Amino acid sequence: MLKEAVVTALGTMSGTSLDGVDAAVLVTDGGEILDFGPSGYRAYTDDERGVLRQHLGLWADDDVSVAAAVVEKAHLSLMREFAGVELAGFHGQTLAHDPGGRGTHQCGDGTRLAKALGLPVVWDFRSADMQAGGQGAPLAPFYHFALAKWIKAEAPLAFLNLGGVGNLTWVDPRFADPADPGALLGFDTGPANAPMNDIMSARRNQPYDEGGALAAAGTASDAIVQEFLAHPYFDKAPPKSLDRDDFVELTDAVAGLSDADAMATLMQAIVSSVAVGLTRCPSLPQQLLVTGGGRKNQTLMQALKTTLECDVAPVEKAGLDGDMLEAQAFAYLAVRSAKGLPISAPGTTGTAAPTIGGRLSSSV
Image (cartoon, one colour):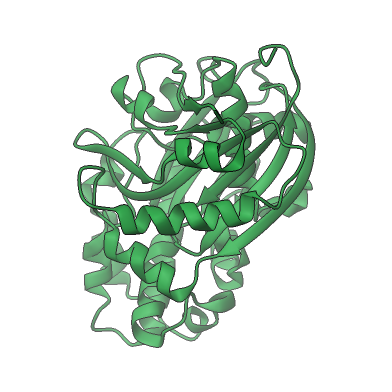
């Protein structure tokens, strides 16, 4: 029945910024977006966030049971608030991501969630893509394509997600299907909120630089930013993806700077990496729609607007919800997975062919 049905799905996302769990309902047939439903958020406590930080870099064959308990408890407490849902998409908490190496590790067991919720759950979205030669990330581009159709875009545009890591999706909405060659290009641009949040936590016991106020008071080190841009990652052609801690050299480089200068430098590194990323796109998008927590950093957004040669705006300008877009994406991908439709393609993850991903766990 699911193959033909319109599905009311609940998607969840807990990003590498380690702030908490987003959940959002989406009504879709796996192709078109038909409606948006309610959403919610459950923050990780300081203790929970500390547990997750301690487990970053660990793999499924390590003992991550304590972290898994945190992730599953947080998700269940939020997901139980939603009624009338037919299917759930559970991304899990990324602890490690090593494309071309050990693979990827999203902590949390979707089978346990399915049984606890009494609801079928799609999870482990990235493994099949990596087994097919892909990067396993980013996975939101197929949803970005559907959003471009929803807002009736007629020319190429781009979505920039500024979460723990930055990722960019270039979309040509003139194509009929997201798996069509040339319809999408997706890749990670570089670090985003993760290094800034880590420094704010370590130095000031604050989760983030609210509004970018501290960065605005500092002066960026051009030398550090230029050294950052010399990293081999920026010479690689997309698709390509990152782990949240792939640029520890950048964090180390700002260690001797004042708090304000360190934040200003990290912010300039983000802006510069996005600018480099745009040069990799097939054409300059008419508009760059920004989602993720970074769009609330006014200093960062102003720097993007000043630096980039296209219109830059939060996704809210297009009538979308930047807080819940990633969670909506995993509701959309869950439906596609359950229907046997691809969720990644050569242009989004570098996989050899459009690839079906996600593991479906029954509630019984």
